[in-house]
Length: 150
Image 1 (cartoon, helix red, strand yellow):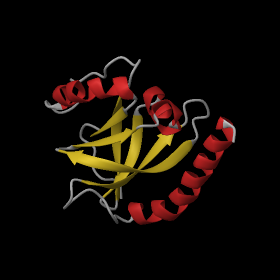
Image 2 (image 1 turned 90 degrees about the horizontal axis):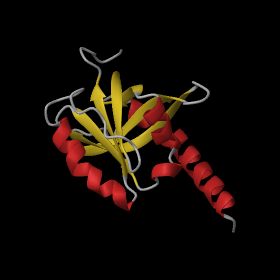
Image 3 (image 1 turned 180 degrees about the vertical axis):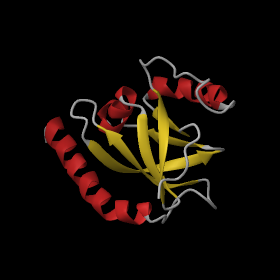
Image 4 (image 1 turned 30 degrees about the vertical axis):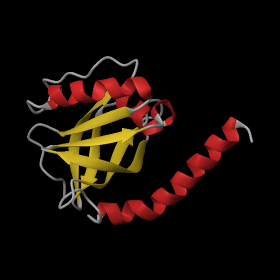
């Protein structure tokens, strides 16, 4: 089977799975809370089209930030979109929030660690070596002064 058909099948699988999972996550099911990791939904503007895409993802809550990762790095459209357009809306605990993403990836400049909580620089430094083996990370910080959107 050709690589393109494998990638197309994988994309179709996740697209179908996301249509089932997304409404539950937006209602607050499986959000990071009691357990530090859970599901969130990112609403990301496409880097070329500007069209908003919703993506359910597993995230870990670290203080006031959310950490999302993937081994698919260069194949994950949502990460490419975040690197180009870091402002986003995300759903956690049943509510929408405004935020800003910092992408930590091999070949990208390290994100500005002064644009978030004090420990953001340490988190970026801890994650950066893992990018050499293909991991890519997005650190989601709440927008300054942002409150949950009803």
